Image (cartoon, rainbow, N blue to C red; front, side):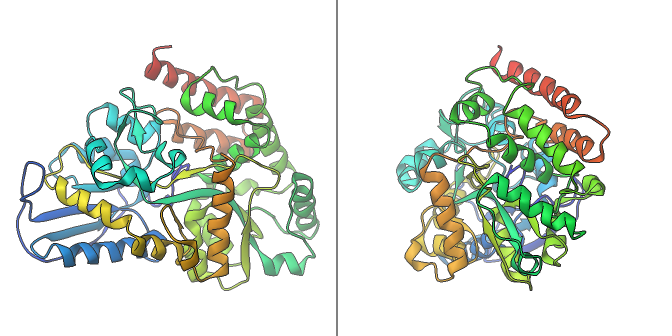
Length: 434
């Protein structure tokens, strides 16, 4: 949302780990050319591919800017997701920040005049040449905050997509083969259920439920649906396929025991740790988990694309944005530049991430190469379908609430579709006037 939001952590007031890398100085003004401090925020875990790569980028920046102090703070995803507008419009905000891409997030802030227009820098520094047109979709927003055209308000330096992670040891134990079709997927899950094992880990209190719903809907979708839903090309009927199919199939999977009803109250972290500990045979979630699983998972594991789908939830990664209030804009642009260098791109790829400008021949681990190859497969067939919570501001919470109700059985698929349709339609009308 990253991803129905990425790496969702603690809500709003979650504790913040702060680190300061010192080289000297005090603040500056204007475009930041005289600034002596760069305040940088992101929400990647320290052992994730991006966390590792950006630590290295900070070190390179420090080496190349010996008169500048870098004040780095690692924030919780939800903390920034819920408070970004207030944060960056204050004197306490950062000079550069990782932020969620999409109409409801970066698009909204850009339309409110809170983000710096990076178009001139994108041309000057060649960023456009390093990013394919599909990856540029989330970097550019029009005056209404709708992605895909207009000025640059953010720069991604990695890609991401939703995939299926599976525990190879559990698959072998129960004689389950990796599915390549939806029929094989349901047969695999039936096998686990027959053995008393819940096949799919889930975190209904955060983004994973919405991602599963969207993946199911995309099984019946085409590019026109994605353009209608995400870019408002035409009205969307929530009572027809593919959304109807997504909600009904999700409810059916809960009824069949593929998804545990008590997972409605679990967070993404709970889902991830259940998979890491070997309790869940599969989870449907994003490539941003890959580096962590690689570092922490003891069981044999791997991944496969959601069976049968041409379209997959995914996009560029989150964006580096520069608040309009930044006092060190020139330094912020320099840092963005560093994150697109081959050294940093290859570091992302060799730690389980998906670089946007890396050299595949430099990726040494076969599992890492597979992650990148699968992303390239999806991207090459125009299969990146973005995320379900992107279209309108506040939709993340709407979807979380809706699919919690579907998991715990308090609402029918029809009722859930009603509950998510009106906020979508009201939001689109507010943005477009139609």
